[in-house]
Image (cartoon, rainbow, N blue to C red; front, side, top):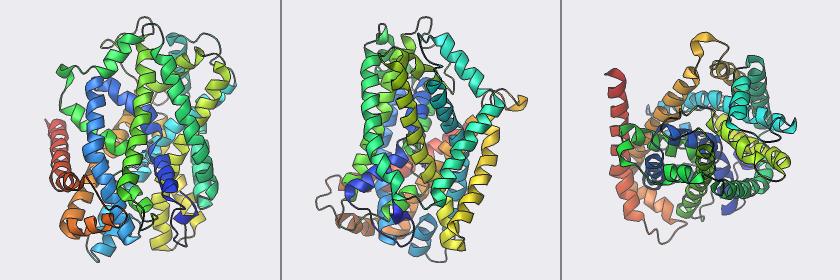
Length: 456
Ligand code: TRP
């Protein structure tokens, strides 16, 4: 994001600036915390492949749709619907998106808080020496169930996010993320190489890459498609807003392609680190092992402790994770804040502060959902928030985008807008087929399955 998010409306400096900003929103805890968690809970390699296929056929399709709608209307999500169908009740879809963003941010802030906690714990030397599974597991559990420390960490995350948004997302963050994102990428690549060369990594690699088809069930699809939406920041109008700042002559197709590719690559490599390292740990076997919400926080310290210079490496890693998380929290807060500024004419500071405080309050039950408060134990609250808002509502949002684009705006208009910057759109007929049939049908099926499952 740049100053262009605020008035006066501008465009990204270059196509590359857009790709960095959109990847900054996309790459975050979704790829590095949620993805391995989903893999662990949904049968390993079958999930990995379902996710990649979902990104290609559904994620890319909807990303291009959102960017196109945004660039044509030059508006935020509520404005997109109002411009194309003035006076209709489509604008309520925009309101639902605002609420969903706040709800996602509330528990996302908790995980980002963990990243912050791990950052200062690494500086404090908590992960020095030979970190075994037991040590790492104990550190995580003690930390995650300490109510005061958790609330403090969430507070810091929300305070930074609110502060940045209240300043109008100045160029700083964008400039920094341009430098830091490639560094994060290099670090992940390096850790991946270290992880696959650990003794006993083989089990983890097979678990991660060799699909066991008996593990395939409707849940794998449901969460695979959901993860594609989540990791690409889709279904909530974020990409519409970003699309509205892309220049008319820029190529929407390759831009969307790059964002999908870089995000998937980061998620894929994170898995390459986690699973070999996890199953190389004595006494931990796939199948017998119950994946916990803190998976990534339990495994990374082990890998880092096995690297020369691990102390500094660890600090750098958790710092970058924090930055990646913050570029995503910022994009989540910007959506509701932009709404209050655009539609209610509130000053930016007031909007940021109000939404920030509400989100912080909403984050507390998620943060305390391990230990502390009894009825919330086992992360039930956090996991339910993630299921409802991070999976179901994003899929609903994606469906709305398909229906709106195909039946109200019409595919020809979208294709015309896309063609402004990209002459030969090779996958044109595939995209049309996907947006008209494949994506909506798949989304409807998985939603029905989930609702049916919940009732029966
Ligand atoms: N995609 C981000 C991540 O993977 C999270 C995120 C940011 C998001 N904005 C979103 C998810 C909008 C859904 C909708 O960390």
